[in-house]
Length: 377
Image (tube, rainbow, N blue to C red):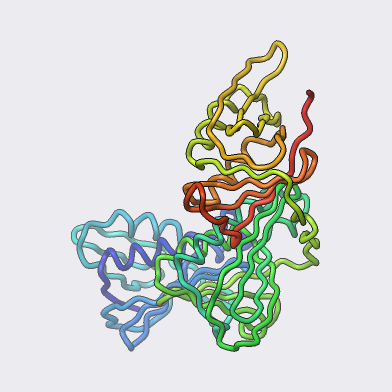
């Protein structure tokens, strides 16, 4: 194998593929990146860990087609640090020579014959705007469980019904749901899949800069155990989580007694400051009334802090307490200038949604449900 490629093209491709390399590969070959150069003038780089696959195709001046497997993270480090000159890659015996200007590296070939076969590139079920998809995934994945006590809660539930897509995640203490539209290949498309949240977040961030992302789910992805994503020359698949996701729709309150509208940035800054005195896993208390929200933390002989932020409050006054980190996550995910917080009572979940202006309508396409924390009165 022998080819020449631009340094930036190679560095970007290797970096994208290498992002999914396992930290502790179950077998040594999975720490490698597979490079396949063909006579058509392209080089395909691939990585696979039995759960997630990544593949990208780049243009190159191919002198000799061939296949090699080299240590992925080392190749990523090298390609990132090469001078801004064309890069020559060539096989020399059991070594792979990487030459760029006066820089020369000699990498040991890994046994390419032992490398597992990647899942076939799935057929797209539809497409979605890249930026909208990335934003929606970020809004929802913040509520996914970060531990492994209940593996099913580490996923994002994706439900497709025609041209509607609903993303949902919960860790039992909060729940995030985002509804958006996409362009299915079949108008009667209907799928429900559970995708690992971290993988989905990484994928959305890495593909979202493209104008459009193709999704393959269900039979189009080669069965119910796989989901595929493609944008431009980048293709990735991930294995789905198994199990029945809990029925959480009942968590959404059916009525609202009190609503408060507050400037998002002001409330974020106030909660951050007040939470400085909150001990680990202790809540901040919020009192809504008199056109303001008063935030307090700390009790008794402990350090204490308080601050008030202007707020438009309709309905009875209410005092409630939240985990400050979960509250800040929700305020950050709303992503609008103002946040509307809806309550039924202090012992029931509150719902955060966004709105663009103080007297505007709430945008209910995204809702973040937050469980309150009991506190000593």
